Image 1 (cartoon, rainbow, N blue to C red):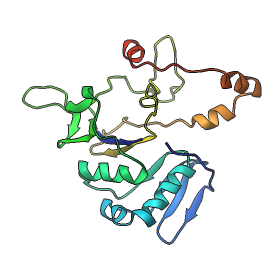
Image 2 (cartoon, helix red, strand yellow):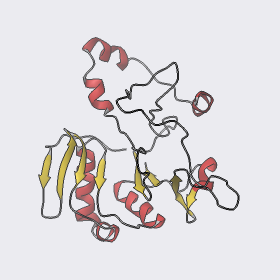
Image 3 (cartoon, rainbow, N blue to C red):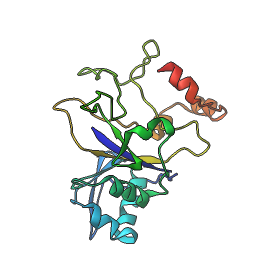
Image 4 (cartoon, one colour):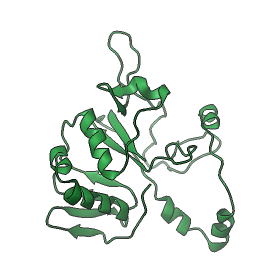
Length: 215
């Protein structure tokens, strides 16, 4: 089970795989894509030093392709999640109408993801993905015949899609439950020049209605 808040865009820069400052020790997770902040942090510490510590976290997030892992955030509230998201950008004021029922503790900027249910009614209290887990050794490559696994970027149908989401794990299953991230910038650079040139001239039409019908 995880709570999520997201903030609307960021530019990408390159960085070395490891960096230490007076405040933080940051190590790359997969080359230049993704970074782990090894220094234990609390929500209070980050929010009390937005211009210093907060700015350093934003810089690391941008330099490592938009994936940043923080340790030490324990028992943060939904309101703190929204405030932490605001360190990285403007936070959406509220969830889409279809997701408001998954709001956490009345905080309409934060949504619960998982398989929790209301004990009295049995109704889901979290946005739940019913897709089977990827088998060990299975390929993460999308398969059009079965439309799995479901890779996505949030709200691409919007004129200005959100630049990212903040995920906070409340309860992890004993196995599975992993969240995967793909480096689409590296994927594009790995294409041959002819394919890159072809893609430059294409325009993608994103439709929420098409998505919902497909899945």
